[in-house]
Image (cartoon, rainbow, N blue to C red; front, side, top):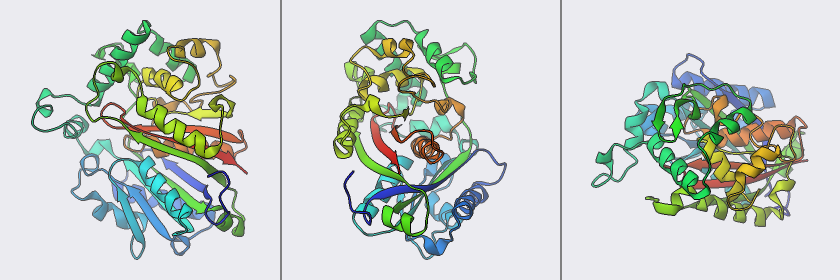
Length: 358
């Protein structure tokens, strides 16, 4: 991907991220897309294709894309909806550019947990006959993952607070245990919001005089639906996705990037990501953390934005991480970045993006 012709090289040329606005979901989405287009000096006529990611459950609307689509401009536009995650919508957008099917793809993703019973929606992800009745949700499965990780590494649960302090974000919850070893403060806040990213070919961006962040490597992988045992304490599908992305980007050493943005579903997931991304060896994440290398002023900063604890809407975690990294690169805060996105009950779906500014 790092040597594609300009007319099929996917780039990120504009982003918009908005938190709670007090508006309805439809009005909020319209405002996000309008802000992106106005900021880039573009109109809907400049968009070839629209890729959205919507969740019927979290949106509280059956066939949500039919209701939310008009707010993002799908009328008379070729459109595709990814119901799995925003990062998958972004991958579809990049693939359209690479295939020469589009020059510009507007990618939009959102989460509105204020309009839906989040725990009930998450339980629907469980297999209905044997597992749904157990009452598990993302918090429960993340706790199982964290417990498996601690069992594998022998670490003390207090290491989670070291990660939070490193990321420089104020804890949103208290000390109560929600799913051992997770405490309320270890979970990111549930906030409404939306993200829009304009993906374009390098040739199109140059013709419009727009600064561009090149997507030089993409990888994605999904592990078993029902993770168990030792696999819970490792992000094996992330390691596979990272290997794909590094190979396509020609990146021999992931620590050579200027910064990393990872989907830290909990502080323990950030530590697991260090290992799966190849930033350190197996079981060495805490040593990397305590060395200061992943601090905002370290050799390879990880989540200097604050990560998900800074306030990111659920179901939009992945696209938000990419947008954060792209904004930093466009602002001159480095030349190359690594982004990790995760979704699924126990982070089984993992995607990796390697980005490079011009």
